[in-house]
Image (cartoon, rainbow, N blue to C red; front, side, top):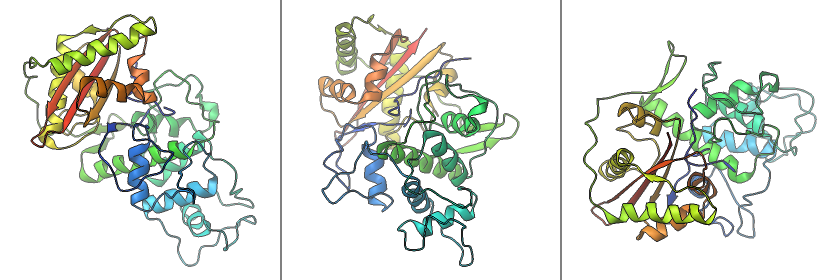
Length: 360
């Protein structure tokens, strides 16, 4: 099995978490722009799915309770209860702020109806995987295309965890510990839900569909992409590799080899983001990073990707990555041996940076 290392960890794997310097609609004083969940928190708060505290903080490290999770999922999906359904819970009354949301999810079987809901209990990561899979009608298969060292069939949540990992809704690296019994933080919940919403949007548009033969979700291929263009002689891209290797040297890690084939792919990805006006790990042209590597017959045993937008110099781009845990983890990943860098700029002067890492 090939080891798939995602572009960022969820406290880490995400998200597909990304870096951007552009200001968004909502701000919280405890959520820096280089935080892995910044974009997710910003988007969801703007939609009214998430809110902060009166002191202007979001509480990124606070655990999400079961009641809060019900409210977030209900608002994100637009679920509402029918007029006649009444749950059996004795510990959640109609006066509870999340009662209608709990009703909506319980009616659909996302939460089990019973005597007690335990609204203030922290949600675990295993429970999170289940409610997201059920809320977004994600088909759960047992292909086990990914594995985690602490997720076994006896966990009860294994199918849900593996399925959302295959879809990139959680970005925990394959083979690492998923920690299914750990509490979900408010930052993690925002990242999970935003990725689930993105997946749902792509499924509705037909970009992603479930292949019954393969028993998994796959990207729709609209056309065969052209071979990678020759990489441009761009010192900015090369400079980022030198800066990354300086960071690795400071931790006594082996320098990454500048890989000409990866340079071409990274440059292609940077130019594709400019051309198609998006900023994400999943390309509408080339699909996921793994798909891209396989399409152009690049041999790998592990891979990762860092992207950044809006940084004006190689130094600021690498600094942004180093200040983000998931991106820093890619830079400091001891398994990686090679790296390719791409740089492009759109008509407005906005910069796009790409690093693709691999283990050979």
